[in-house]
Image (cartoon, rainbow, N blue to C red):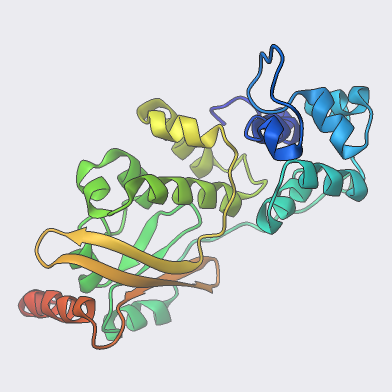
Length: 275
């Protein structure tokens, strides 16, 4: 990976997260000559109830097997939510060999049929946000939604995609955190290595957010986008796992202005519909 921390991912995560916690958040007076952002190592150790030497060994990769109790204590000090706690636990090296299942990001035939049948923007993506299949309405919603595109790359490097998202700053942070959560500990995947390397070179925003080690689920929710033809749309997003891919659906509340705009967008593409 481009940040050079693949050999000690637990230590990298702990360093990144303690750098985001202020002394005031954990009841420590902020005074003194603090040379590092966030908490010092010895402060984390004290609050977690472990020795400073032991915590130093964790950050430096000299102990890859902290107990569940230590992990829970560190998670509490670092103010991790449940998704982040699960991610932290997943960073602990298991001494037993694990045979990983090879992931095949292939679009099942039934999904191609479903994409053509649904009346909302829909597409299929892989775990690294590669677009694998789309329907016409999805591409009409965003031309970047087409097979061969990568949604994370488009979001970070394409000015039109950035303008498409009403809150691009939040969208970028959410996508990057979800990307880290989705790839989990499979850091040797060539697709992951290539994408992280490309974005690290091309996007300062990616480098900044990747260094934070945020993790987040990006399963669904509501988003607001700016379409160049029909204007602002408030859309719900559902992500449905099917085999090794995700079916993503965007839809508006029935009877809403956004639903009317989606219907207009659909009518504009009907003469050229090929799905």
